[in-house]
Length: 448
Ligand code: PFF
Image (cartoon, rainbow, N blue to C red; front, side, top):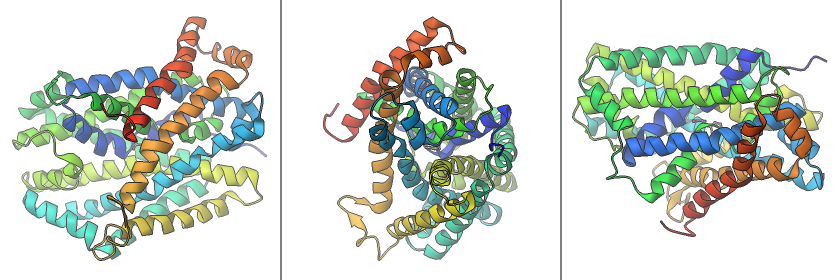
């Protein structure tokens, strides 16, 4: 049987499709706003270079070397205690936990494409009401768009790497980039563009605090899709003469450039209307729709383009999050890829529905545990705990517990011995220490 593989360009597009997601367009601008702009961007860029790319290369190495699902990859590469290390391969469960709420947000975005076509809210107050009604009262619409999103994602994964995932990314990614480029050029015609530019690129220490560093580290992991076997799994389907270091750097650069482009567009629109940078998580679903309204018919076009770009970014990421679980079942049981996709999707739909319900009035009290709704718990547990743990384990595993001779031989095909030394130092020490700090802080064990 010929193995289902990406082409060289297909791999880069799909990995970039995974990295560029809601994190870039939705989360990056508002956490940048909340944490003071330029300094935060600088720390974030440093983190991507010092920690993010190293872990990305580590996962790529594991997939490239083994060509297997994540569980088998750990087992194959471990020098000792193979059975024990297999457990580390189950980080894809984190990915699946993230997926159930990630798709809920994609559902909201699809609904906002429709809202943008028909009736943009005319003020921020109205926009807030529209969004809160959707979130806390309108269960049927949310369920409908949630199911539509899952259908697209599951169908794509069920078709396989080349016919499904690569094809989808080849259409959605270039379209997304074109839309963002168009919006970027349009926003350059506003006076507020230069203000947005300085906000993102000139340091302002006022709002920056120690915790911002940790926010930046956490986001670097999330945005590059690392720490949960997603990049590992995609890499296991790459063409054997792909350069894993080059492709990792290209993906990280693309991901960063797109986040910055989205930031420039969003802040230009915000500043143009005299708004402050920090609008929190409601920025995309509340503030922006009301601001698009101000532009009249152009506003509808802008809004539709924006939400389509956001939906495409989300869908290509969601596909990558589903793939590791499906690959695991496909390769370790007799269940076919198609069946595996639908079984896992069905389970996630149930989890997603419960989490949707947890925001709805009347149910929210019953589904609240402590201070958070189920939706928030999903988000918190996966991104604050499981994801960083996954990253640290992967780095330590390759850095200390995989065959170091083979590692060096393989990596030195792509990089010089000097660069190899830097990378190894990073995954052995910088990653465990840096990311460990994020986790400990987020868990509240220490406070900065
Ligand atoms: N990188 C995606 C984003 O920035 O939205 C999210 C994501 C994808 C997280 C894949 C984790 C993952 F495994």
